[in-house]
Figure (cartoon, protein in one colour):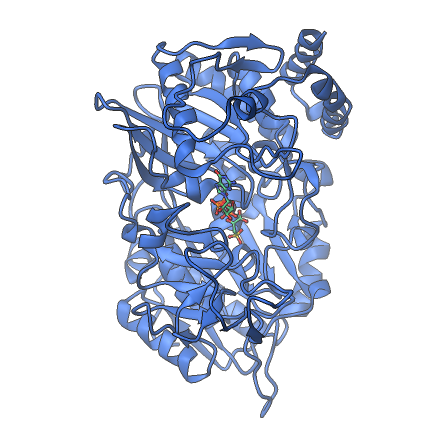
Length: 595
Ligand code: GTP
Ligand code: SPV
Ligand code: MN
């Protein structure tokens, strides 16, 4: 071990893990730039990192084709009883799961270095922050954690001899025998991957994958699954939400937190540049919000992360210029294509496709190839501080006061562009019934419609029926200071399969309507599903969308909604007696309004 660890619990845990996993070496990280550079150098020397001539201090990695996204089917919430995990989570009893995983962990770091990564979610030392320590045998994880979280020796200082932390154990699950040549992206086969959470113990065990949320354990595992369970116990909220600040032409600020499922537009909305003149948007966070009620009774949000782990395909100067400017240097790219000029490329980036490139699997690629050049879940890891529109208050320990909640998903039909909830309970109903077509952010089928309540289906660390109840109780506590709730769908398609709404910067038109609703300045029409903008309420000046398309986007098709009811009922039934009565009442009222 390179340093002496003073925290007793941490020291004991490191020794225990080392004994089980038998690494060749142990290295405790300090989070310094020098450390980052050394790790990158090591990854370059072994041919795993590919330097990008066109972007300073930026590197491309290619993962194993079997390890390209989160693995929801292998993700577990291991509470003492199945009921505590609830119907939306996979469950194995803690004893059994630990036994299985201990057998896998036995000797799993042989031939490798075990890295100890002390990190803070939220600014180091802030009362709202949480300290985690990830043990990992992947240097790729170390460099990504450097960007995504606050890795620092100050975290160890803060822990002192007796401070508490959340232990996050990670192994790629690929021990190296003596003389065995390492592969470029070692990992375990799918049947041996386990992403396990023990919420009662605030403990995370991950095995077999090196990719994204499976391996960077501060993100989904700690900041959502473990944190949501803590938040329920302690009376706060941990949500899969972007946070943005919108300023109107008069200088009034609105803070918006929006929950969309994976690959459904959070990063894009978080740093969107409004097409409506005079409005300004700044980014506070793009994926996760931790929210607490402040001394004034309002709900305050912080972004616990330090970077963006964003979807590359579709990102361009046209769609998300602020992301493109964030990606100029100091970026880790994973599973993008490599051009002959030494830059990254992906489907949907600006300009013509390169005549030749190396695809994400390392093969030659030309525009005639039948396969995509970049994987659909190719990602960039970039420091949030590099975003040109990062909000000056993004690291403020007390957070920003939330005025508006948005829920949503990817729906090619039925769901209109925007709906306002009648009240908090109705807002919780909209969030709890949110449905979306599945995306490449998870291993599995793409485009299947599923209920993804509050975009938290894969991330809620306890029974989601209780989570709905928690939302109700937070609303009761917030009273008239509760944020107003809206539902959006940027992804409605025409019969010929084209998006009806231009999206991106034009989403500002919808956000403007929301802010004006909050200010009591904009009108709305009562419909069975909620409040919708009436003719003229939505700012459409300069918008390229035809009147017919707009009508279609704001249409409430009662018959189509009636056809949704059985599925909503089935969805609710899965929660049994954990479903709050107030949601049953909402469903009854909805049915009644539909007539
Ligand atoms: P995660 O990082 O997985 O949580 O995803 P996310 O919710 O941050 O999604 P992101 O903003 O990265 O967008 C995912 C994909 O949807 C990208 O390919 C975007 O280009 C596309 N997208 C985002 N916003 C819009 C929009 O308003 N309209 C359309 N048509 N596509 C969008
Ligand atoms: C998501 O899937 O919602 C992500 C990417 O943000 S990952 O970190 O891999 O979970
Ligand atoms: Mn996400």
